[in-house]
Length: 625
Image (tube, rainbow, N blue to C red; front, side, top):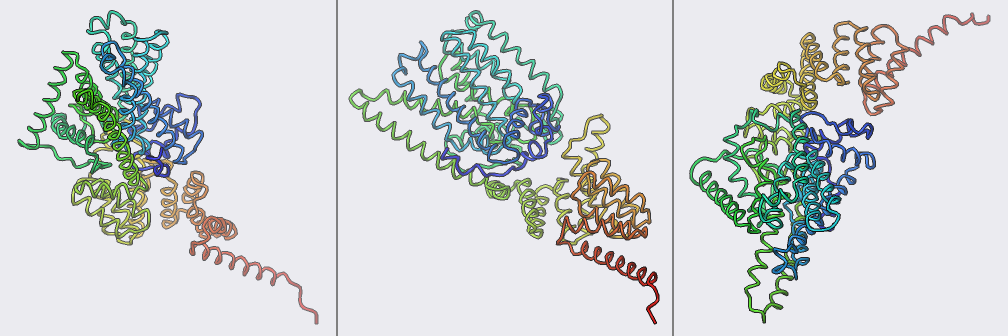
């Protein structure tokens, strides 16, 4: 808790937005089927148990980030305790207790403590939406723990039922859970039954039901909820190129496991390796580790199972199945446990070779090393959590670690733009496009910043380029009958809306109206697009159509001050100055600092007063003689 004490105020960042604050499904817990839904293509999509956990958190905490961080940390601590239970009970099995039984609890505590405090796990804990990884990890560990209890203790039916239930929930949390039934079987073969045949014959009902949980995952995956970020249909990288990167990625993960320095939030821009040093040498090392793991499994060596655990959990994200991002540190959440357990137990086995008369000294040294390692890892975790203090800080840290990461530059620009520092934001968008000139999002973001800073012509060029790059994607969704993801709809509704404003300011009203039409078509809940189209209608003298759009804009967003002001202008142009003044008054009440609203109200009030004075003067009796 001390190591993560500085993480509780970390804001929603990156993929958090689409899965939590912009996800309407988390707002209601009933019916549960609604709470388990999610916007397509978001991290939470196709993961109903993750979605339900977020809905539960929202029910009690709203959008207070501290509640989400507390739940994430609680999940991680529980996972650490379950890991300790698995290691302890494994070391107490008939096969291992003769060698490790006396120190089973101490060794299990050391493994779980170091895993719990390791900074490589910060992304799975502090990055809120990666509850997907930590919650799946907890359920994965519980699946194995309950199976172990059922195989070695009393109340077998109860524990096997718990194992199946946890496995089922895990399948609905994240797809990496797919390897859990295989890992359970390998564990049983290695430490309990002695062979696959004996394991299946002794506990075949449990294995049959565990295997049936794959049907749950298959039913979820069949809906392809994240087709733009995973699968063989990805446009950004082929299966072969993705597989080439994973040899380097796995070695990078292992390097961070032992030397957690230089961690990065995002690894966009990872080069596809070619040549001896970049490809063949990492491939030889990784394939060598796979071969050693297979050999260990054949001989039923404990470290063979550790290797199998490592590669089985990584296989869905580090194989031939291409993902949009070749590397993410949260993917090492469970594999790291195997690395740490193998290291701690390996050091203990080496220490056993010390003469008996020096064993006490060795024990003292070992305890000191564990305490020192725990303190060091806790310090590194605390330090790493500082990077998550704000959206700007995490992306600045990423750009520092990965200078060739275009996505980091884009998000730094967004963070500066949100602070009103448009000139700095534009420089970072320029840097992003210098790294990748075919990224439509960077053109969109730079266009918005340029428009806000008064550089209309450059902004128009950027919006046109963004639409040129992304129109094929939008058209493909329509052609294939698929729903356009909400985040894509909103982004390109905004592009058309902003381009429409530029056209309107240039006097190109018909083009502006066409862009506003397209913006509303993409996002029917875009209040600003309705308001802007209403203003364009006013320029064309179509005041009735303008009023209809403004009423729609206000219905969507009752606090939309520009819409009330525009409605006042429409009434004014229609000669209804009293109604105009009423609308101007509402606009001023909503935004008292906007000078144009106050000016419009003042003009309307002055005209009404003058009209009243004229009426009073005309109806007054002749003065007495």
